[in-house]
Length: 399
Length: 134
Image 1 (cartoon, chains in turn green, purple):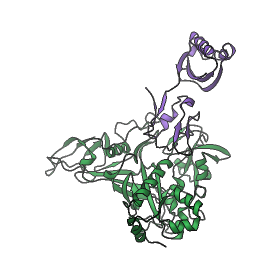
Image 2 (image 1 turned 90 degrees about the vertical axis):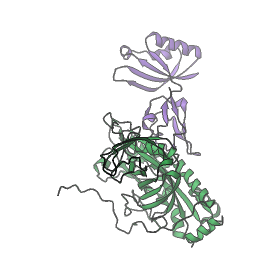
Image 3 (image 1 turned 180 degrees about the vertical axis):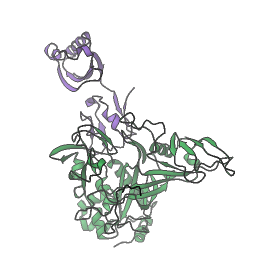
């Protein structure tokens, strides 16, 4: 048994043993399970993939004379910002599109530029054009604003992912006879390919399936900088079917993440275009898992062959919400590049970058080992599999 | 020598037997990488041709003489390594396995020799890492 404060003391003294998930698995091979458990203090896990429920809120400061952008209209590089906030606070969502984007009118739409790309440019340090119109008040008389803004001149600029780190996800296929264009990528007809989106054995919530160490307040690597788990994410759904070891077999828990955009890096925040679907932001996240007890250690050792994902038809079952699945496959099979669906061999593609995830886990390991990043005690638990907390469908009604 | 070329057949030639002559008269071996008749009823054929240099030249001269337009296919599609995140969503889409994952580095490798410039990776890449070079 170890405590987080003991681990932090070791980090301070430069004595903590911090390893990435791959290094953990190699250590077990080399030294055995028991010895590795005794020695390792922290395991770094990570993921990098598209997550539409991302955005930034930012404060541009007051112009002279002042303008009330709240309730007005604002675009940043042509992409509309949400203005239902105070005078100079704005929110830009990753999935926002320029008003004149043709969307899917020319099917499948390209979606070459949107909120996610604006966020990437802002992080990179580019000057961005802000255009605004407002209705004018006695205290905020100005009605028009046209200016370049730069991240270094903004007051607060904060990345807020209201959903990230999905604990497992669907494998998407297409049973129809036409290509389809989805948030899971291009799916060729008649089981032409299968796309998945998870870092599997590197994924933070698959390494801590019962949220023993990850909770509200957990300090993390976010987009190249430092962030925190702010809350559980939207669509958090912990009570799904799980394996004997407790690993969810369906999309389950999620995290809401927050962090200072000024400390982030465009290598780990990438504008993303999904043909025929829309734009989004790919976000790099790294989560340290402190080895506090044997149960946490056992869980963090999970391998791809012990994690199973449902195969779902995105031509009918997903859009119609039938809940039907075509089968289950392990991440080991997915990583091999070929899975079996309905007795056919199907080639797999992945939307989540395991290479980037491994890079991130390595960086986070270095931060901790060098005493630049300390672990936090969670301040509240996430609803777990015994909580009864569920992701409910919409009940449409007019009364 | 082995080369890849794109042949454009005008509408009047689409139903004529032409390509077999490469084998019969010019001793060239070919492999059809892609064949389609586009909405304007022009035929597009992507071939990999193997044979002697002199035969290759004669064969292509023949194709030109009957009205087939020839476009070399060598370095049309390029990969921008700075933009690629190595997710691999392109891998199963590529019809000729020109995109594949290196299992050691986990990087996606683009094997230009295998590319037939069909363009599916350009449309499907979420990070705009695949482009036609101009």
